[in-house]
Picture 1 (cartoon, rainbow, N blue to C red):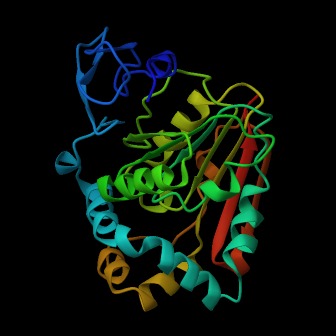
Picture 2 (picture 1 turned 90 degrees about the vertical axis):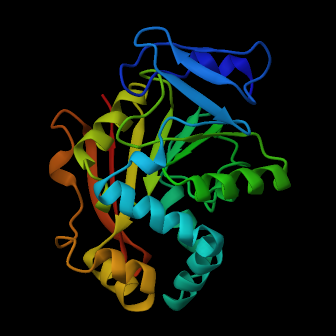
Picture 3 (picture 1 turned 180 degrees about the horizontal axis):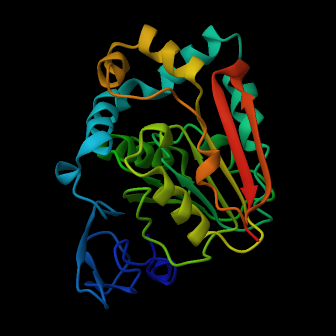
Amino acid sequence: MQRAILDLLACPVCHGRLESSGTGDLESGALCCTRCSRSYPIVRGIPHFITPEALTGSNGRFTRLYNWFSWVYAPFSRAALAFLGMNEDQARREILDRLDPQGGRVLEVSIGPGVNLPYLIHRADVGEVYGLDISPGQIRRCQAYTQRKGWDVDLFLGNGEQLPFQGEAFHSVFHIGGINFFDDKRAAIEEMIRVAKPGTRILIADETEKGARGYERFLPGFKGSFKDRREVVTAPVDLVPAEMLERRIYEVWKGWMYCLEFRKP
């Protein structure tokens, strides 16, 4: 990770500028906030903006779940899509083709092991790609995947409810899978809006109630995490600020996922 990225980063708590404790590329050391003095370690080239052990509620529970699940996440996703009668290419493009990056920076919030990257990295209208995830297991697998492929993707361990970026930094911001069970969905949506440039299309997708029930039925780990701990799944349309433009909600993946999109004025 090159030092130039410091121009994009900000303290996730106070949004102050960050400085590196070292002199070279950001492979180790720490990032220090010039405003509140918080320090964030860089571990094997990945800045850590959270301490997973300190997470509580749904964020803590699902971080532990995805750490356990990270080693089979990619093949399970392919198997789940095959169960729906869809191939992965068809399914991913059904959502990702809606992005409008305009040749600029793209941020995926909850990047997981990087299953969406093959549909971004070679697009002519995509510039630099950045990814953040709350799960150390997922982000490590994503790093290993991008290194095997030789792809230049900057990765961060962090919470989608407190993004570690400057305002108006990205030309495209999207999230696929996870927001249904964030502790603070409103904060996550506000953060995606904050870091998006004016005119950016923001896209948020996650399981519908039909999809959540399907996962409960077929995946033991999800069943234990969901049972008696959730409300009926609905898309967070009411949490999108009224001033957002081109608001649209629709179902994809044969009704197993909703897609909520809107454009920042």
